[in-house]
Length: 449
Image (cartoon, rainbow, N blue to C red; front, side, top):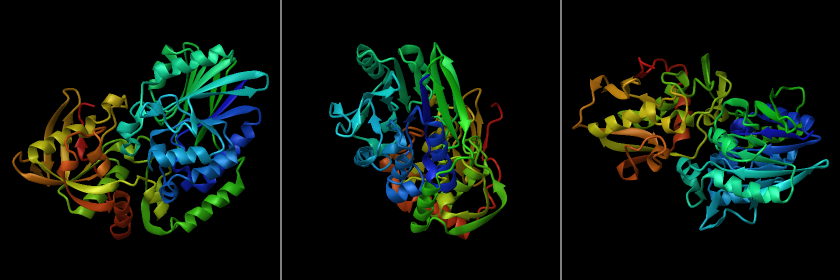
């Protein structure tokens, strides 16, 4: 029986040393006779990831000693050179068949498109693929071209089958594209990431699995069958040495400082960080408008990371972990007519990526009424007044929304009039000076959803 173990999208787990130690301990306990594989976003984002430009992950990799890894979009948060250097320093092999620079494989000195591994008397071929929109989702990855994963996988599968491997599996950071990959390629299993749901299925004989994010679950795949199980990580097995290493790193970088106290816990479930009107979403977007004094602020749901509720004393690490990126906070200047265009993208910016309809950006200083059935913005007000198409408005956004069209294409770099440092610093300062006990109320009404 050939067993695979998978972790994926661990992201902010390094900011939670005990949980990270439990993840490493669980993988070690389960992994004596298994291939251990990672499917991306395992170096970033996170508070410690920002402080170390992703290299904090090397402590986890050294503890777990995975066999192979592929790239997620956030593994490029600090640029292609940093992604290459981490891949070269890590103990596992890095596999990516659909990333190139100027027609050559990305980081050929540190990566391969596929590889083979011996598990007992069985040979397993492993192919790695990144999301084809990686450079669209992450401006820091620009310069690297990411192509359709299906042809790349087919090419590598043919080469691996020609070498008489017994099984071929894919480690993928392609989200829901994995279902298409299962139908259109000849592979035995797809170990996926990017989308943060816990998912286990068998499609046309191919096992497809995702273990969610933040180190809460690991996937176990038995290729003879195939059989898929997702296990919740607990404290039964903990790598104490890794825990102490991460705790020391938090202290070294000043991330343990308590900056606010929360009286009523603020949920950070996967739903809470993606729906209009959640307290956590409102607090983040309110901090951007507070720092800039803008008329309006907009923040997309995909930026906020889920996790344990904010409760009691809240540290710098927890606040940075809400939106752990090096995005600058900017103010763009828009006419009322263009502001309405920006508002149209508030409930629709993630639709093309097949995310749930509940996904909705957050707004501060404005109230919107959106008809999902008709796909129409029925009403938009700023400071209680209807948006005037001829008036000029100042809108605060992280520069991610300026530099990409991934979520909102109503404005761009030429509209920026002011910059205010890192957006995440605004969240920390807001907590210090205003507190975290507000944020109530929905600003986007969706009566037909």
